[in-house]
Amino acid sequence: MDMVTTGNSYSDTTNTMTVGTIDSSSTGGQNVTHTHGVQLIIQNVEDLVGWQARANYIGDRMRCLLVSVTPFTDTTTGQPIGFANLPIDQASGIHRAVTTGGGTCPTAPADNTNTPQTHLFGATYSGSPVDAAISPDTPAKSPPDDTSYSTSGGGILASITLQALAQITP
Image (cartoon, rainbow, N blue to C red; front, side):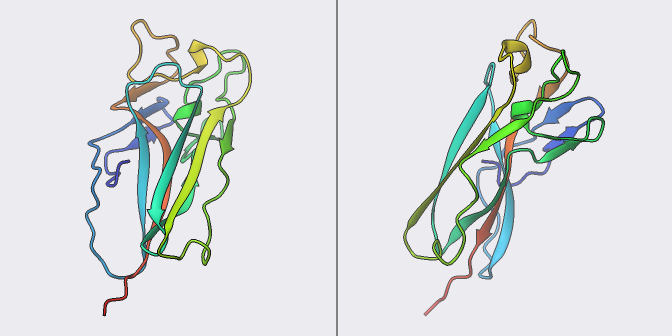
Protein backbone atom coordinates (compact mmCIF):
# COMPACT_ATOMS: atom_id res chain seq x y z
CA MET A 1 0.00 0.00 0.00
CA ASP A 2 1.51 3.31 -1.07
CA MET A 3 0.34 6.00 1.34
CA VAL A 4 2.07 8.84 -0.54
CA THR A 5 1.26 8.46 -4.24
CA THR A 6 3.56 11.19 -5.53
CA GLY A 7 5.55 9.76 -8.44
CA ASN A 8 2.89 7.21 -9.41
CA SER A 9 1.32 7.77 -12.83
CA TYR A 10 -0.05 6.44 -16.08
CA SER A 11 0.81 7.84 -19.52
CA ASP A 12 -1.70 7.04 -22.25
CA THR A 13 0.72 8.42 -24.85
CA THR A 14 3.14 5.54 -24.24
CA ASN A 15 0.79 3.19 -22.32
CA THR A 16 3.26 3.25 -19.43
CA MET A 17 2.56 2.82 -15.72
CA THR A 18 5.13 4.26 -13.31
CA VAL A 19 5.43 3.61 -9.57
CA GLY A 20 7.67 5.95 -7.62
CA THR A 21 9.01 5.40 -4.12
CA ILE A 22 6.54 3.34 -2.08
CA ASP A 23 5.81 4.85 1.33
CA SER A 24 3.84 2.47 3.54
CA SER A 25 3.41 4.88 6.46
CA SER A 26 0.91 7.68 6.87
CA THR A 27 2.22 11.21 7.20
CA GLY A 28 -0.76 12.80 8.91
CA GLY A 29 -2.07 13.16 12.42
CA GLN A 30 -5.18 15.32 12.08
CA ASN A 31 -7.96 14.77 14.59
CA VAL A 32 -10.70 15.73 12.14
CA THR A 33 -12.62 13.51 9.76
CA HIS A 34 -10.81 13.54 6.42
CA THR A 35 -10.02 11.37 3.42
CA HIS A 36 -6.67 10.04 2.31
CA GLY A 37 -5.95 8.70 -1.19
CA VAL A 38 -3.65 5.67 -1.38
CA GLN A 39 -2.71 3.16 -4.06
CA LEU A 40 -2.34 -0.60 -3.98
CA ILE A 41 0.92 -1.53 -5.73
CA ILE A 42 2.14 -4.85 -7.10
CA GLN A 43 5.74 -5.70 -7.94
CA ASN A 44 7.55 -8.76 -9.29
CA VAL A 45 4.63 -10.53 -10.95
CA GLU A 46 4.37 -12.42 -14.22
CA ASP A 47 1.24 -13.10 -16.27
CA LEU A 48 -1.32 -11.50 -13.93
CA VAL A 49 -4.87 -12.50 -14.81
CA GLY A 50 -6.60 -11.40 -11.61
CA TRP A 51 -5.94 -10.34 -8.05
CA GLN A 52 -7.67 -9.78 -4.72
CA ALA A 53 -6.86 -7.89 -1.55
CA ARG A 54 -8.43 -7.56 1.87
CA ALA A 55 -8.47 -4.36 3.92
CA ASN A 56 -8.84 -4.85 7.68
CA TYR A 57 -9.54 -1.85 9.89
CA ILE A 58 -11.32 -0.56 13.00
CA GLY A 59 -14.54 1.02 11.77
CA ASP A 60 -14.60 4.10 14.01
CA ARG A 61 -10.96 5.04 13.23
CA MET A 62 -10.43 4.57 9.52
CA ARG A 63 -12.41 2.83 6.84
CA CYS A 64 -12.52 2.14 3.15
CA LEU A 65 -14.63 4.76 1.37
CA LEU A 66 -13.99 4.07 -2.34
CA VAL A 67 -11.97 1.56 -4.39
CA SER A 68 -11.19 2.08 -8.07
CA VAL A 69 -9.51 -0.85 -9.84
CA THR A 70 -9.25 1.27 -13.01
CA PRO A 71 -7.98 4.60 -11.66
CA PHE A 72 -6.67 5.94 -14.98
CA THR A 73 -8.10 6.69 -18.42
CA ASP A 74 -6.52 5.89 -21.76
CA THR A 75 -7.79 8.89 -23.75
CA THR A 76 -6.67 7.22 -26.99
CA THR A 77 -9.14 4.36 -26.54
CA GLY A 78 -11.49 6.07 -24.06
CA GLN A 79 -11.09 3.15 -21.66
CA PRO A 80 -10.56 2.97 -17.90
CA ILE A 81 -7.15 1.48 -17.06
CA GLY A 82 -5.59 -0.36 -14.14
CA PHE A 83 -2.65 -2.73 -14.04
CA ALA A 84 -4.90 -5.75 -14.73
CA ASN A 85 -5.85 -4.46 -18.20
CA LEU A 86 -2.73 -2.45 -19.10
CA PRO A 87 -1.70 -4.57 -22.14
CA ILE A 88 -3.45 -3.89 -25.43
CA ASP A 89 -5.14 -6.91 -27.01
CA GLN A 90 -3.39 -7.38 -30.35
CA ALA A 91 -6.52 -8.86 -31.99
CA SER A 92 -8.88 -5.99 -31.09
CA GLY A 93 -6.36 -3.15 -30.68
CA ILE A 94 -7.87 -2.07 -27.34
CA HIS A 95 -7.47 -2.85 -23.64
CA ARG A 96 -9.51 -5.68 -22.18
CA ALA A 97 -12.48 -4.85 -19.96
CA VAL A 98 -12.09 -5.32 -16.21
CA THR A 99 -14.42 -7.31 -13.98
CA THR A 100 -14.42 -6.22 -10.35
CA GLY A 101 -15.04 -8.37 -7.33
CA GLY A 102 -15.90 -7.68 -3.72
CA GLY A 103 -18.57 -5.06 -4.14
CA THR A 104 -18.53 -1.57 -2.76
CA CYS A 105 -17.05 -0.40 0.50
CA PRO A 106 -19.27 -0.81 3.58
CA THR A 107 -21.16 2.35 4.47
CA ALA A 108 -21.81 4.11 7.77
CA PRO A 109 -23.27 3.62 10.28
CA ALA A 110 -22.77 -0.15 10.10
CA ASP A 111 -18.98 0.18 9.99
CA ASN A 112 -18.80 3.17 12.34
CA THR A 113 -18.20 0.96 15.38
CA ASN A 114 -15.12 0.21 17.46
CA THR A 115 -14.93 -3.32 16.05
CA PRO A 116 -12.73 -4.99 13.47
CA GLN A 117 -14.08 -4.55 9.93
CA THR A 118 -12.97 -6.05 6.64
CA HIS A 119 -13.41 -5.37 2.94
CA LEU A 120 -12.46 -7.79 0.17
CA PHE A 121 -11.97 -6.44 -3.35
CA GLY A 122 -10.18 -7.36 -6.56
CA ALA A 123 -10.27 -7.46 -10.34
CA THR A 124 -9.56 -9.57 -13.39
CA TYR A 125 -9.43 -8.72 -17.05
CA SER A 126 -12.24 -10.10 -19.22
CA GLY A 127 -12.24 -11.86 -22.56
CA SER A 128 -10.33 -14.60 -24.26
CA PRO A 129 -7.90 -15.87 -24.90
CA VAL A 130 -6.26 -15.68 -21.50
CA ASP A 131 -2.59 -15.87 -22.39
CA ALA A 132 0.82 -14.55 -21.44
CA ALA A 133 0.75 -11.69 -23.98
CA ILE A 134 -2.40 -10.08 -22.56
CA SER A 135 -1.46 -10.78 -18.90
CA PRO A 136 0.75 -7.97 -17.53
CA ASP A 137 4.19 -8.41 -15.99
CA THR A 138 6.26 -6.11 -13.82
CA PRO A 139 9.10 -5.95 -14.49
CA ALA A 140 8.85 -7.13 -18.10
CA LYS A 141 10.10 -10.62 -18.87
CA SER A 142 13.13 -10.98 -21.10
CA PRO A 143 12.13 -11.21 -23.86
CA PRO A 144 8.72 -9.59 -23.18
CA ASP A 145 5.49 -11.40 -24.14
CA ASP A 146 4.05 -8.13 -25.41
CA THR A 147 5.44 -4.66 -26.12
CA SER A 148 2.15 -2.71 -26.10
CA TYR A 149 2.86 -1.40 -22.57
CA SER A 150 5.65 -0.85 -20.08
CA THR A 151 5.99 -0.45 -16.34
CA SER A 152 8.56 1.10 -14.08
CA GLY A 153 8.73 0.25 -10.39
CA GLY A 154 5.59 -1.92 -10.40
CA GLY A 155 1.93 -1.74 -11.30
CA ILE A 156 -0.96 0.18 -9.73
CA LEU A 157 -3.75 -2.30 -8.97
CA ALA A 158 -6.16 0.19 -7.40
CA SER A 159 -6.63 3.66 -6.02
CA ILE A 160 -8.34 3.63 -2.64
CA THR A 161 -9.91 6.49 -0.75
CA LEU A 162 -9.67 5.92 2.99
CA GLN A 163 -11.73 7.93 5.45
CA ALA A 164 -10.06 8.72 8.77
CA LEU A 165 -12.58 9.64 11.46
CA ALA A 166 -12.11 12.26 14.15
CA GLN A 167 -11.38 10.72 17.54
CA ILE A 168 -13.19 11.93 20.64
CA THR A 169 -10.74 12.66 23.43
CA PRO A 170 -11.79 12.65 27.07
